[in-house]
Length: 390
Image 1: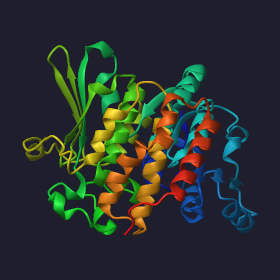
Image 2 (image 1 turned 60 degrees about the vertical axis):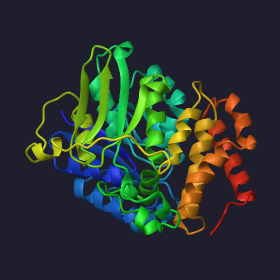
Image 3 (image 1 turned 30 degrees about the vertical axis):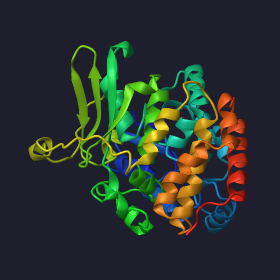
């Protein structure tokens, strides 16, 4: 019997990759729902290609326009992400949650009760709302699989292992496009150069986060939450080839690592088949790659945001929501030429220590509404202050 699949955010990078895997393995999977914010062109092509009955357009005007154009179509077009239960009358086998940003948190929570297995590729949801997600997973007995290559690797390496046996977990970072540049050359880096990741094809926001290593800081926070381990168990190491994604050092002296090509279809396909045999069409093992892994410690002067790891609280607080919101704000400023590269890095560190924000580190969000209120509060404050603009 074919697995019933939902892809939330089917027109983004992860969503497209998931769709293409299913397209090439139609005998095993059937998509019952696709969603997008406003990319009606792509989602319509996807729906027609695999004869998908349900699509959801979150943007109201885009929805109305497409609904009018396809009034005689067999495709059912929906608009309200809050009413997924009205579309999915039965629990599906697998949902890919690939809606970017905190707007993906509520659909992720809602999907848990509608899915037997949920795969999450939305770091903001995990960072800010993991305690809410975890409670829902436990209540609904829904399986969870992390999709980021690093977290999928850790998840694979420590399955059936006692957490007390873990000495250290290393998350690898390529070092981005500026790894070999001198610190003095970084102040006026143009965004177009920061977007040129040496190994991965990614969106603008995550490409900038990769250049600063902020993306890796977020991944450590994610890993801490997902695997319920102390922050001191995690280290970031530079690995320019991005072939090894995580390394686990156990107390018994064994060291395990997981490696694969820089292709997100590998963790996604493994999550879709989940312990079932399948053949992945890749090249032979690259021995020369294994002979030149080239690990090193990150330079904290070049990547100052690493210092933020020392500030991550042990308990659930608003720290994560605040740091996500500040970073989003600064990256947007940088991409639009309002601040330079150094200001992007050092303003983040300065602002997270601002007394306006630190008073909230004693408290934590109880629900999605609390998180939304804090995002609005932080954004309002940031819009009132002045940065060292260009």
